[in-house]
Image 1: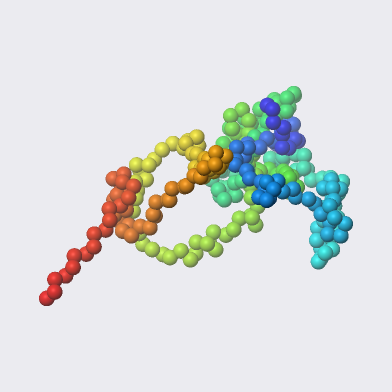
Image 2: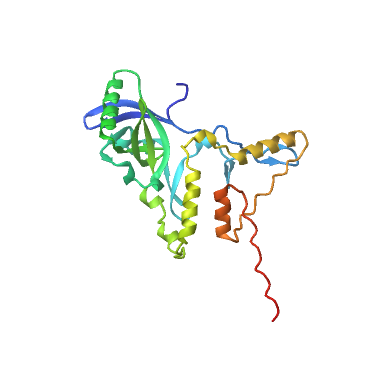
Length: 271
């Protein structure tokens, strides 16, 4: 395993503990990234830490400050942060088990692989893992990660565990604030039946490999074209304005990408 752990400490279930490492389970290394460039010189812009009175300052000389009133700060250096020694700074204590369905998906956040350190702790890790597998529950614990204590949800994944950080209650906005103003509309049962059949046609097993970031791919095409002095024009998206909902549903059921144009009502003859 070439990557370095994001965090190292212990996993604890009652009196059973084992040394573990947390490894970030996702990667953004392949993302298209841009830098700020001065078009007059083609030089990349450098962000310089600057004191408004004395000018540029070395970042390594800086400390953190909490603003208690306007322009008044309480200062903290790394030694101060080391004095905040919660157990969760170095230990993930499993203190509760819940059903997966009990955790609203809005709360699930970043995933980490939990891997035992080599040595005598591997057996203890296996005991905790197999006990969790037998229980069929999600384990909850706490961990200080990146300067903040987060709740963790841990589940068995193959020979290891996956720990998801969970968003705090006050980090998740109340859905009612957004959904309460949605008008109460009674859906036409025939339309619902057709929509259900369309859903049945599109049933599939989840395969993350099928998804490709088309925006990312379009950016790469444009980068390649600009390198050669050309320009890539993106196609206009299809019109999504649905005038006749039933016609759109029926066309979708037949596999057509566009509904048939709604025929205008026949003109009445002059009496």
